[in-house]
Length: 240
Ligand code: C2E
Ligand code: CA
Ligand code: CA
Image 1 (tube, protein in one colour):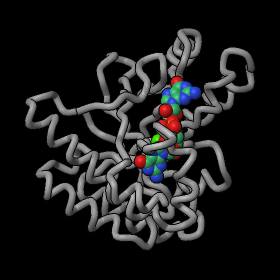
Image 2 (cartoon, protein in one colour):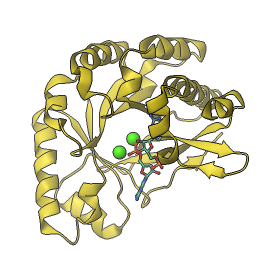
Image 3 (cartoon, protein in one colour):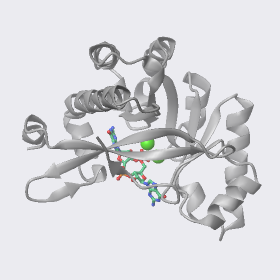
Image 4 (cartoon, helix red, strand yellow):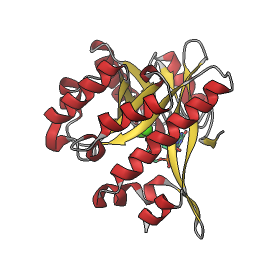
């Protein structure tokens, strides 16, 4: 019945800011989908994205999300606002064997916006099955001018082969590295190691899930991020 929700335009996007750690400037926003369900109210993506991935509905839902994000960028543009780059979440299953490149090209030209205003955050699900295809598709998207980030880095199975194979701009380190940062000395060591690895490869580092001043200081004192995201700066909010 998710399909019906799609037909009834019940899916909306919230936007969460990302901040440049050194300058404090707005770096961009991440689009996060919500289901405005007539009975259940606002439903979080964890409750329906996995099912959408299983059933394949993620392809149609993903297309809608791309369209909503591009429409929002066009609105901001017409309102004369300084345009932040908008990151869209794309799961592995959505990347491989779908019309993602075509869908993105069409949405960009329909809404008349430059590809450089879009970033894709790629999550692992379904990715490891066909890393070579994923690499080819991402190469094409990158050559169009989109920025590519790997999401939830440091979880799952084959993270290091992603760094090796995929044409990335950014690494977004999983929230679990931040969660106990101020309580568990091992977490800082892990975080520093991952950050070092990403920078060795010339990638920008995004740290998400930053909630407290203590976490922020620890990250900043240890030079562990280029870009920061989390409730400390802003929660996902509707816009437009
Ligand atoms: P994600 O991409 O890792 O997104 C970050 C999640 O962390 C978001 O949850 C956000 O609301 C939450 N968050 C942000 N700052 C903080 C913080 O400081 N502390 C804590 N504890 N949480 C924070 P949300 O919006 O419920 O999204 C959950 C997941 O659903 C996302 O994780 C992403 O994997 C997936 N998702 C969301 N929107 C989309 C979408 O449009 N397409 C696809 N394929 N997946 C999506
Ligand atoms: Ca994300
Ligand atoms: Ca994440």
